[in-house]
Structures are given as C-alpha cells and as structure tokens.
Image 1: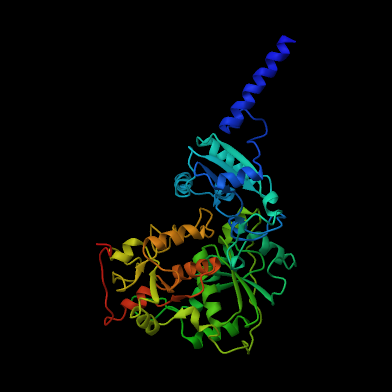
Image 2: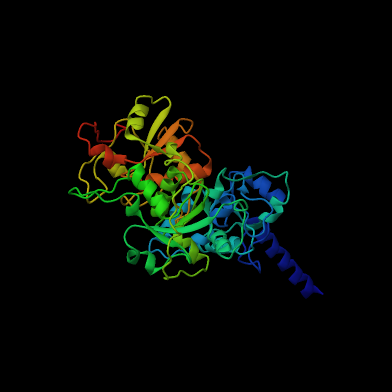
Length: 455
C-alpha cells in the first residue's frame, strides 16, 4: 500500500508540473487541451498568445475541415502548419523571424488551434523543438459552434481560393461561394511560350495565357512590357473565349503572374475573377499532382457582353494619377517596390535604367531582394499574409486607408498582387497605377526624386 501511495504521489507531482508549466514533454499524447473559457482569458492576457495553425485560407474565411463558421478567432495570430512543409533553404530563418513578428515567443503561454486535429499538433511540435514549454491545443470547432463567440473573416475572402476548392471544382462540384457561379474557367498564367513553364507542370485541365498577350513587348531598345491598349485587350478577351459573366480562377507557378492577369481580367469586365492562393505550390502542398498535358483555351467568342473595359476604375491612368497627386487629402500613390528602388539606389529591372520615385508617392513595401519578391505581403508558402500585418506597415508610413489608394510598382505585377490582397481584406477605394515607375520615368518631362523621404 505504501508503494502504491508513493506512485500516486509521484504521478500527482508530475501532473502538477504539467499543469503549472504547460510542458507536454511528460504528457503522453501531446500538449494538454485548453478549454474555451481558457482561450477567452488568454486573448486578454499579454503573457499568452493564441495561434491559428490552419491553412491561410481558413484564417481568411473559408469554411474548411467541416467547421460551422468560417474565419479566425478575433485576436488570434496565424502560424500555419503548411509553412513547415515548404522546401526552402532559408525556411528555418524565415520561420524564426515570422514567430518574432507575430509575438509568438518562448516566454509566453501558447494556445495553438485547428479544426482537423493535425495542424495544431504539428505547430506545437515545432514550437517545442524550438524551446517553447508552455503549450496547449484547442479545437476551433468548439468556438465556431458557439455563435456568441466572435470570429472574423475578410470581407472578400473568396477572391483568393484554396487548392482544395479548385480540386472540388475540377471534380464537378460547386463548393462554397461558387454556388451561383457562371461558367468556371481555370487558367494558368506565366510569361513566355507554353514550353517555358506551362508544359513543365500546371493545374490539371488549365489552359495557358502568356502574359505577353496583355502587355506585348515593345519594339524599342531596350524592350519594355507595358499594359496593352483597350483594343488589344478586347481582342485578347474574345480570342480566349472570355465573357462578362464568366467565373475565372487564375493559377500560376509564380503568383505575381496570376495576379497580373486576374487584375486585367477584372479591368476588362469579367465579373468574377479569383486567384489560387499560393499558386501551384499550394496545389502540391495539398498533395495534388500537376500535369503536363496541353489544353486548348475555350472557343473564341464575338460578344464579350459589355463594352471593354467593363471596370475601368480598376486601373488609374497616368492622367488620373497626376491629378490625384495634386489632391493628397483624398489620394495616395502607394509605391510597392523595394526600398532600394523607392530611394533611387536601384531600378529593379535589367532593361530599365532610370532610378528614383514619383514625387508624392509613399513607400508601401513589397519585397526585399529584387523586383520579383513580395516578402512583406506573403507567407512562407506564398499565400496572402495576415492583413493586419501589412496594414500596420502602411500605418507606420502614414498611409491612410480611408483615402483612394493607387498601387504602383515597376509596371503593374507587384501592384496587382497588393491590389488583390487589399481587396480581399475589404478595402474599397483602391486601384492600380499600371504604368508604374517605368511608364512614368519613360517620359522625360515627368519629375523624379531620389533619397530617403524620411530625412
């Protein structure tokens, strides 16, 4: 009996250690499960952090994994288990920087939640391996099933689509937000001929759009790629069988290409244009295979259904941009280039030599390395970053989101991605200055400034 009592005493001490520290090293089956009331308390306590481990799409608002309400717990931060599976030589460094940015630090108690019983455990395992000791799991379905508890989702979350939804469409289903969709067309966008990228692997059933079709290379030396005139864009739309009432999902190996084509399709007048969030990487991380079989585009049409452009307000012309810059109380030109481009240390492009920025533009972030990076707007798996984080960056630079925001970059690719993310979040008075820095600086009569605007 004394021996049994001693065993019980030891087990009680071990249980007390687990409860007090949150450590699950001694706990069989992983971290302890948090109660809903504990999650509520944690959200109000700065020594705790609540982490959403699901797909970025679920955080944005999609009802995945059988959850009764889409969105995330108000006040939670995101750290997706999907990011742990990305094949990138810099992933270890990126993930550690991401933890710091989101305030997920080892000195805090951490509640990690999901809706499938897998993602939260994967993130908890990663955190434990990196020195976190106070870890708990939570089933988000409990929260979602209680309508009195607040959940948030982006107003237009459906604009960027998870791979699983694309797969359901290919399987002949009409998933969430597609119930009333018109004819659904799934396209693959990339620069160059089909052999350059498309035939090396694409989402099954997609047909290819070469971005040169909407921004044909000039005959000048050096060659430039600028958005085509409305007549050329109209011919493009008709040739590829697009109509106003279509539902189009654009995919790409490099998401920049998909957002560029998607923005132009919206400008042309296609009512329902969406993008595969994360590009083909999202597809392969979901466990689906790419194909190399070629597919023809739909048959050409003679009637788009409305005058092109059907949504001219998607793009600000140079004249509109110049006028807006004269009214800074209602207009902001957001420069979505690297800092080096913004201050005039780099052009960002091998084919363009003029350095600097447009007077009156405000640095709005993009990437760090070059003109093709989007570090400040993407997660490690190339999906849309938590909007509160890039909004905070804009606030730091004095960008007022209640004004008309006109996004620009070199010639429209980066700006198109930012435009879609801002729209997904729910900003309304937004557009793209598609001519960008290249269009502006090609006109020698336009003013240019360089240097740090903060000095």
